[in-house]
Image 1 (cartoon, rainbow, N blue to C red):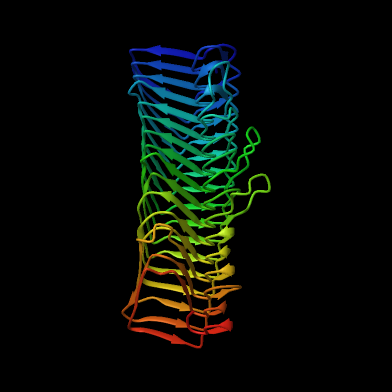
Image 2: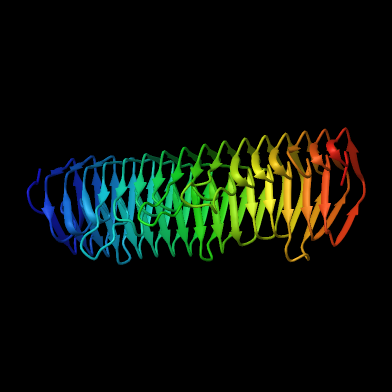
Length: 454
């Protein structure tokens, strides 16, 4: 039961550590409880508490060119400049199974930004399975990662829960830079960032997310610069590639754009997901905010399949989805979403819709289901086998409100029971080319002009 000082410093060794209790060790260097160098160890059934690396990394454990298999252990109340509980570097391999991390902190130090409140991994590999992270915190506002920070890493995280983790800057639970990340059957709840990525922040990374849940996460206002954040649950930028499947996003929110997901300079695939009750509020400190209640794609191509968007809200535009780029949405549903413009979707680029249902979406201004504004005038909106029913706009286009560009609607589209002041189903202004065939307009109403179309 080591305490007071460093617990273990191990080099060039192989072995196992079982049933340890290590607490109250403080070190100005790294690995206040255990430091492994060029070693291979198993760690099981152990308890670590209040071990602190005050100026460097790895409050409990630090790895260099080492392998550690940790199982059935507790890591509580530690702090370090980064990697509050565990630090892995220089081609290390860290495997964590059935472990509990609570109240760990990346505190930063003079000239060192805090990242990875519980675990920080650099140029190494980490696999985490059946574990829990609670109340992890990264208190310096750049770069972030309330629970886990990754740089040049390969990470596989499975069947793991993140609860009430926080970063003052990016990635309330997970921060990933230049990394390859797989998240399988994870649950991130109540996570917060002071800027971008309330749950996960990824830049220049490849991220695969499947069978996971994100709820009540938030990208808040950054009080250091007054800017609102993007991506209440997920944030991707700088040539990232993301594949998100079979996952749920519920009641996430943001003060700027992308209540659940934000992407810039990234290519995104979303399949068999649900987005419900996510919110992009207009921040009172920043007028240019409140876009994409569930998803905002600023730059990068997208493909959305078999996905449901329900009761999402954006104060300004794109109740469920806002984009400036081109992409495809198929076999999906948008129901009871709301915004000022584009109750379900607001877009500037080309969009192909196939087998998509828009039901009971609302825009207080224009585009009850979709508001399309194409300043370039050479983009296409191509709609087939889709349904617009019961959508409402306070002004133009109960179903669609289109400005410029080309509209092609063919093959069994229906517009029924939509309402708007002008153009109950469809409002078009300065469209370059329009072709509508095989489309049914029925029981649409306009309080001023054009019950079917204007």
